[in-house]
Image (cartoon, rainbow, N blue to C red):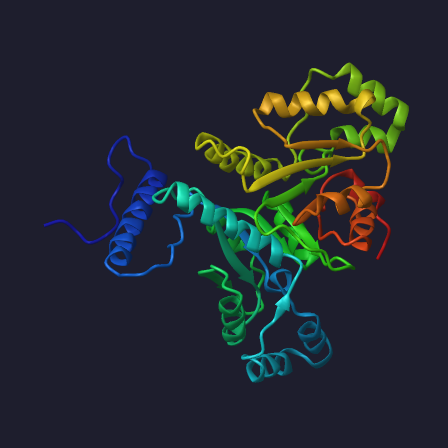
Length: 358
């Protein structure tokens, strides 16, 4: 008779492989159960197949008043207020229209690939208490959002759960949490609300990226900050054929590219619901070739590349009207905000040493 204690894994198989096998078995059992239920709603994809975007409650919705109550009156009054107002719908926050655009892409993907799970999965990742959950659910349902996975940590940092959820991108209004996630190797950004109302496309997801310290590493920006513009130009021309190292948002650009190719494969290039933009302060003639050759070496396409040679980015972003614009420098974030662009600060690289104190 065999004992009931733990057993060694069979020869040739690792403990990690055992865990993966158990996870697959768990998913198979869960899928079998849900397949037995009749529903018109698309089910969330398996995390290993999905592009998981984790969004905090303060990024998804406008909780400015609620945050004031929390800071001035404490947790108990905050929870009490939320429960008394659980039927009052939250207004949209800075990430709201980005999430809506992600869900439009999902709808188009499901039309073309009904059984494919490679699509966006939105997770509400918040350190809110579960007592606030009803108001969040009511607001999500009011707007018709498809957010089935919640992680409410009751005051504890949610960052540890990001890896467990296989998060591809984390958006929060809390810069400390974002910095914590960046240090953990997770693509993250702090969301800032635009100062003007802008009409966003409801048929095409538009994502704008800065280059250095966002898509690419900050290696070239270090030279610019420490040795000046002329040395930067010289360095970039000497290293034109050497690809830049990847930055924190390279993986998300890659995810967008994979989904774009799904539409191209169905002859939908002209009607693709995803469009990407590189909006960089670099000069094209002096330092643009290395950027474009790096993207080519990665097998990535960018739909539009705008080299501004140090000119303000705000006016260009007004023309693009992106659902989100990623940049590593608060100077550009603030300029974008003033003209109505929802911007997301990526706290990565040497530029953080030169930020003005807030």
